[in-house]
Length: 216
Image 1 (tube, rainbow, N blue to C red):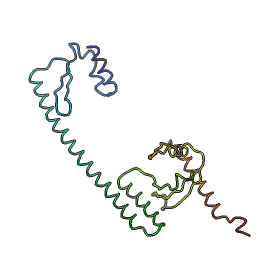
Image 2 (image 1 turned 180 degrees about the horizontal axis):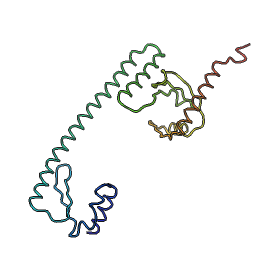
Image 3 (image 1 turned 120 degrees about the vertical axis):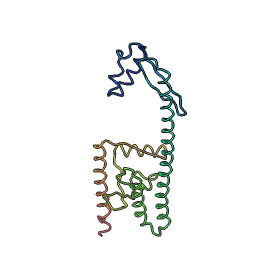
Image 4 (image 1 turned 45 degrees about the horizontal axis):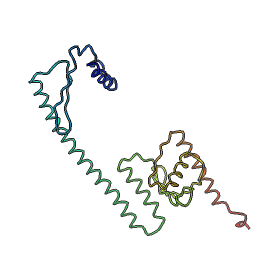
């Protein structure tokens, strides 16, 4: 009995609440009685401090049957929700595909990335911005078509600077990985964005300042 109580003690400690008060050795002086009514998806169990009567076993079995019905309904709803979600995703992709096929000038890529961002928002992805990073295999700078709620779609280039995020991106590129993800603490995110914006402004200043040869 002690090993059972030790096991349930660990479980109930994690669960907390009234379970902690119930699962005490003093409540199971005659032993721990656990009963499972088997169903299609697993079992429906009850825990008692005495042996059950036949009537109680019958009641448990009937409740197990009802839970099986409930879980069957749950899985049916999950399947329907997944199908509806897939339809939403396909519709969003089709909108982007249609806009892409309607492009006649390269500048229209800004409208495509804006639409991509809008569709991600519609699909309720918690995105702050979206962007196409171009030429990333040839260069370490970030050449981006960028869209967000706060900024109009823009084509920008951010010169490379040393940062954990950028370096991990370059590492993934060097390894030929086809998917990259990263998690930032707020301090790192703020620092990266601040340096990126400063680098972008510096880059734009360099482009707009005539060289000595141009002035001559």
